Image (tube, rainbow, N blue to C red; front, side):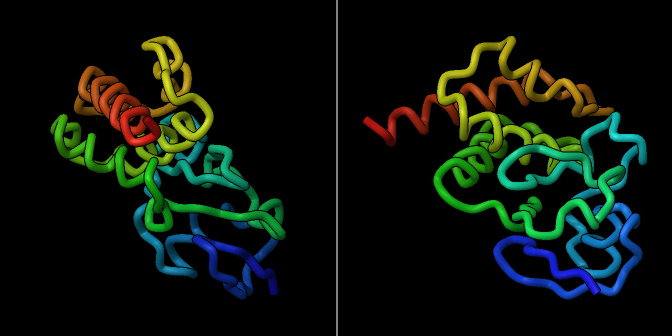
Length: 155
C-alpha cells in the first residue's frame, strides 16, 4: 500500500511500485484530466507537477512519487492557474482539447518561475507538448496574455 499526496489530499493505493503514475491517477484515483497520449513521455499530454516541477506521468513509476506533492490539472488553483485558464479561453486555444491539460500544467509551472517569458522561454517550456491541431501560436499568445495579466495584478 502506497500513500500519495494528490492535489493536497492523501490517497492510499494498492498498486505495484512500478505502475506508471498516469494509470494510478486515471484508473485507481479516478482523476481523468491527465491524458494518455504516447506512453513514452514524448507528447506531454500526461504532464503533472511533482513538487511543483513538470513530470510525465506515463513513464514515472508511482513509487517515485511517495512523499511528494502531485498536482494534476484538476488540482491547479490560485492566481496563476486561474489566470492561465482564463487566457486559454480568451485566446480560444483549444480545438480538440486533448493536449490542453498538459499544456496548461506546464504553463503554470513556467509562470510560477518566470513572470515575463520570451517566445523562446515559452517554446522551451512547452517543447514537449504536442498539439495535433497546431494551436501553438494561440498557446504562445495565451501564455503572454496570462503573464501580462499576472504582472498587472502584482502592480
